[in-house]
Image 1: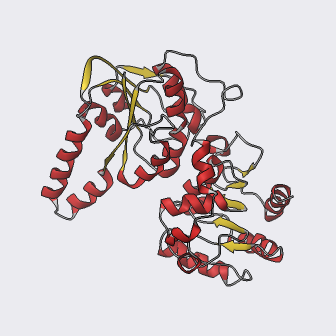
Image 2: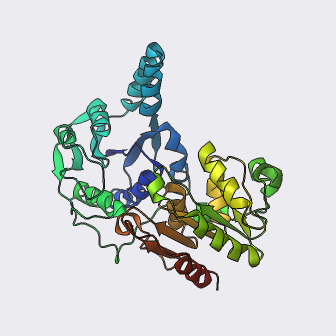
Length: 354
């Protein structure tokens, strides 16, 4: 059987969709499994690629809806059309028997329309919106089977419900069958720093800090300002961490976030504003951090998925939707319009660093 997953973006959503691969492999161990994803997030799938020791994703097929849309606005029509034709050609190299579209948007459902399908192919998608998640009802027109999921449903569980329907099984019990994300051998490779000298992007000169010494990553910003935690709180916990002799690292993703990092660093002894880094570098940094503290954003979720000591801070989004429920190494604090206090986070730090 040839299976195609469609989950295009964004960082956190793609990460929360990873358990679907494991669920499908359990049911169909010999099947070919491919995944269509936005080009910016292909690197998230690389650790799940099939190799001689592991069977996971056989092919990651990238598309560039976001870039094409921007290019069209800039008048680069011919280039965008050429790239779209190339994507369609690559997509149709394989004839698929089962297509699972877990995003529930028209653009992701449209990808299923382009697929080279076998005569009796099944196209699985969402029948309904879930609370606080994007959904476009017209997407159902592209499916052969629309699956009803609970209105209040965790992001990981929502995708797993669709996979279960595709496998003609009952929805998984997360307590009995907790989600799996990346293979253990890959996580072990990330934390092996014996070959650090061969990885120039991880050098002290490049990063601005020594990752062989204890450090805490503080992801203070995200796409929506309302999800940010108060700067004064970051300063409070930063000073506490610095007093323990731990490097406080304040990553950023754009110039506005860099300015916030610089502002915080001025108030936290020896705090570090690192250089910009790729998702691939972020994998190493998150895997080797003593602790990650962050708001509801993709790289915070990456730390939780790695099962590393993590404090997830919710300020203006529902904790139940993306909280990491699979490990005691992860503490989730706050909720919609109910951010945690600095004292609560300090207590969580103490608990995780005992």
